[in-house]
Amino acid sequence: MIDSGLKNNTSEKQNFWPYGWWKLMDNYKIGVIPLPLFIIAGLMIFAEVLVTGKLPSEIVVMVVTCAFFGFLCGEIGKRLPIVGKMGAAAICATFIPSALVYYGILPQPIVEATTKFYKDTHILYLYICCIIVGSIMNMDKRTLIQGFLRIFAPMLCGEIVGMVVGVTVGYILGLTPFETFFFLVLPIMAGGVGEGAIPLSIGYASILGMEQGDALGRVLPIVMLGGLTGIICGGVLNRIGKVYPHLTGNGRLLPAAKDDEMMNQKGAKTEMAMDVTTFASGVLLAAILYMVGMIGHKLVGLPAPVGMLFAAVFVKLISGVSPKVLSGSQVVYKFFQTSVTYPILFAVGVAITPWERIVDAFTITNLIVIVCTVVSLVSTGFFVSKLLGMYPVDAAVISCCQSGQGGTGDVAILTAAERMELMPFAQIATRIGGAINVSVSLLILGNFLV
Image (cartoon, rainbow, N blue to C red):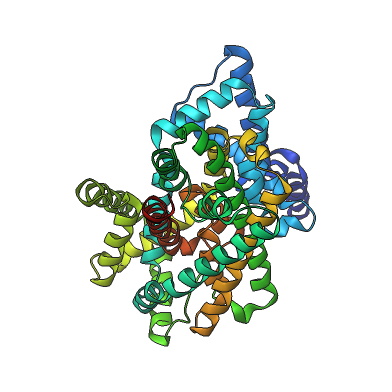
């Protein structure tokens, strides 16, 4: 009887259903999606498009669609030889969809539904606020205060060196310093599209007498190429950190004090015991702080993500929420980092990344100037931060974000660098740094150069 029972048990375990099916789901994944579910998701998406000729833009369908294509493109990038370990996943997740749209390969119903969903829901803001709040709540107070105080030095030095190198290289290649600075170097450090390229185009139209559309057409591709270079630099820095681990804090700008490490360990234990309601409170905390940022934007004009960042820092410094809610914010951060990043990048690639403008800017002269500018910016941030006692790899990743394409660029760069914890500092570099660059440059252009 015992032998018979063992044989039956062994035979049952060898059956494909359900044990083989479960093994297939647990051991083979595309991103975070089990392979069988991934295949089913793809079949459902294309069946909907073929049968009805359209794809609903409602959130349930879009979660499946963005997850399917986002993780697929990211997986392609990860499996590329050599560059797969240098940020190619983030590049592919963003730029493959853009190319597929331009060449008409991605079905139009998917393009229309994704674009409508992205623009109507502003899902990127939910992603950024959960990442920022979660990463701030995960920092010890010492790192938070000293990090914000120290990061400005490498940022400023990097911008100065980057501008000088960029203009010099452009002059050597036959461009005028005026053209190189205002139409190549400045757009790279302008802070993206909404806060950078568009204000620049308005300023150029007013001061130089250009059509705003023409000015935007010249500036926008440079912003995107600068962001692409920043993504590549972020991936390279990640590899440097893995080869030379003493140069990186793996998401920290400064070494943590012993008491801070003990607090983090306690927080990790609390996180393990967290329930679903605590996770929900973490999401709600991020959303409330973002609303605080929105009100700040209406009152003083400060970008909502930056206002939210300052509000989150204030809450952290005064210990305004309990350790259990803090742990909830940290888990929310980890969820969005692992499960939402590539779907978001896919939506960004489809909705707001025009492939044709990127291709138009691919001239040898532009590429040389852009690469030299960004590399000198990042290299300066690396060495200056090292002199200040910071982890140079992590500080240099923030320098990469100074050339990023706004909030979407920060997401792509930090994904390539595998340091999403640095999002609060990245937002400072992109939004505040970009706004200062644009404002000061347009002021000088209008009052002294024209």
